[in-house]
Image 1: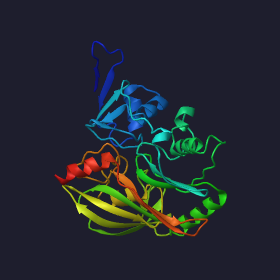
Image 2: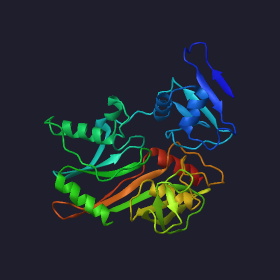
Image 3: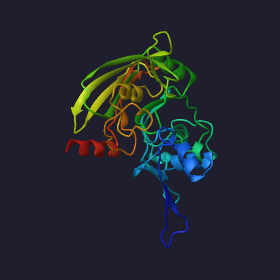
Image 4: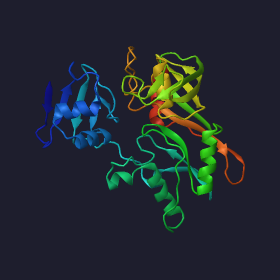
Length: 317
């Protein structure tokens, strides 16, 4: 079913589609392409730029699974969410070896290779370089290495090394699991706490990254959980990473029956009611490591952004 809505003063219509059984369980970008007639590129760009909603909520991930009855709306007039400008990037710590910053939600850590030049300038590494250029008087292009990444929708603390030696040192701390990383997450249901340990593979059997029952395959993934606060139908959970696999927190909690609020990919096995959230409610709240030059132990803390706090407050009522 397709419904077009256009006001007399609008030249570009907004289209709305209802997912039927033939498309249930498929990726959002694939379904949008099929129902709307858009090209792959235009469908994905529309999703990434905030012009697509599913059941009234912004959909930022084209890989998210849609279900029968989901209402997909495409509005080319929607402004979408812009990446933060370099001046808005909060630098928590800066020295000659590294820089620690607050990553806003909705900003990719690094380019993935299929972005336009404008989109590449809006990734976090580019925004941090631009900010450092201004701070340092515009002298050349600042060196910036990558040792960790945060998902596009995840907010919070991240460190960028500024020298080759710092990159090696910080990378080694990640490999031996001595870097402290503590996240705050809003999840469905009641989580008491404990440790989740599993073997991650690229395809767990349903086309998604996740855990396997074969202990000889994949990579070890370990997440420590602590209940911070019980909420209405949800829990505020502290997640401490021992390992740092791709989407580790999202996968572990979803496989345990407690997907994060805003999760749209790893929810295939969740049968409960979905609580609303505009993005994945995950925030990198604490970051700690040994400074690669001074040997000093550094620890940083970050308060969740407004959208996270607003959702938390709603769940407390």
